[in-house]
Image (cartoon, rainbow, N blue to C red; front, side, top):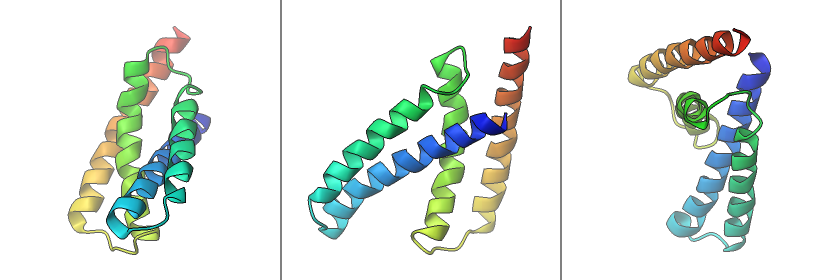
Length: 112
């Protein structure tokens, strides 16, 4: 399960970085070279998701959705230097419980 989470968090990093590259160009008027970096990052994101050990894409995307939310909040804190609110912490803890349930349930299904 640890390796799966590494893949999911890596995919989230690449997706967030890729989208943030577009954000930098269109919101902060940065160089258009950021778009090339963003496209490459988004390709890496999609590739990383194909490496998870899920039988069905929809279930992989469901788990990924929760990881994406957690990763977005980490990006908010570490890259954008914004503090968490109590709601951020409560929401992400709730989401992480959901991720664990889906991920553990799918692992049990794969082993049967």
